[in-house]
Amino acid sequence: MKNNLYSELSERTKQIFKSVVESYLETGSPSGSETVLKRAGLDISSASVRAVLSNLQKEGLLFSPHTSAGRVPTEKGMRFFVDGLLEFGRISKSERENIEQLGSSKSKSYQQVLDEASRAISGLSNYAGIVIAPKYQKNIKHLEFIRINSKQIMSILAYENGEIENRIIEDTGKFTSSQLLQVSNYLDEKFRNKNISEIKRIVETEITKSKSSLEEISRKLVKRGIVEIEPKLNNPYIFLHGQSKLLKDEIISKDLDQIRELFDEIENKTTFVEILENAAKAKGVQIFIGSKNFLFKHSGLSMVMAPYKNKEQEIVGAIGVVGPTRLNYSKIVPLVDYTSKIIGKVLK
Image (cartoon, rainbow, N blue to C red; front, side, top):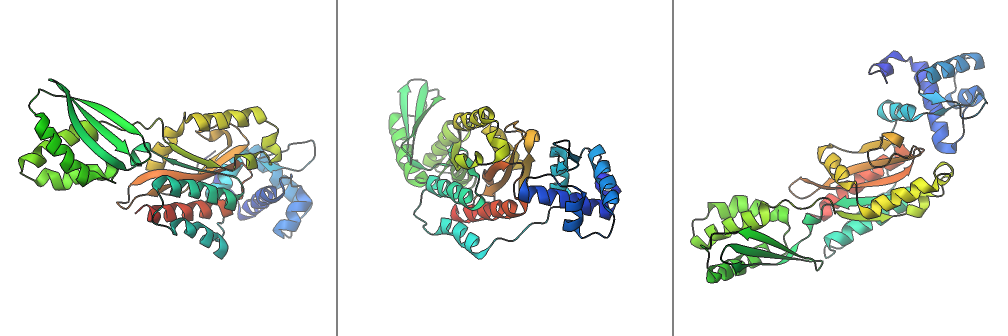
């Protein structure tokens, strides 16, 4: 698409194009000149509308799915509409209250909040709701360092969900078993119910400034056994609800093999590192349309995704809706945006 195409189009052409897209989003059907005239309320002839539609088709923004004169937007056209002509709706009071219920109980675990957020946004959008979070956000329940031989120490991290992770630290043998026990007791109390991101900040601010031998040893062991070992992002938490709702869409349901492939990909978590990386770069809601979507190449699918932040305003995950290209973007975008903000507040 030409970068200046939006500025090149006349206001009347934009109005006609907008009418075609909005009609398609509502009905899924092609629009002819008569439909456009009624919808746009233009005081021009049908022949003039047909000429504009023809030009928009030459620009690659519209196409005719059948031999009829009716037209629907292409993926390029949908992108053009979303970037320049989309007018966002407002969240209703009931929708707002539904989303805000995510924060009704502070006793909910990190995973419970995200699972409920996925379920809530699926219900409100009537499509699939998805939340992605790196696993290293889970809280530590127990932390211990033990010597396994004269040159190696093992750090043992037990998480709130029952997972246990062991990490090997190469060592010259200068820390005794007694020192490691002291450090383990000190750090277990200091870091209990905190995640790796929080531990990093504590090490950088509190422990680094201390001069005691216990905290000096603690700092070295934490940096080498926890902080400096990057968490694995290739197996993040995935919370997905409403997959079956995708099959209700006429266009999507015609290609069940690709839909099954998408679900398999989601279950196998093969490409979600890309979502987290994209979320980290995003300032707000992102819209991925059709085959331009980095997650799946199905031309009938789109995804609306927004990052959510922790109390330090760091992006720690993403929430979104997966649905047909014919999504109600004006409704879905503010829903996703508001839900991401509420999750951020709950996780503080």
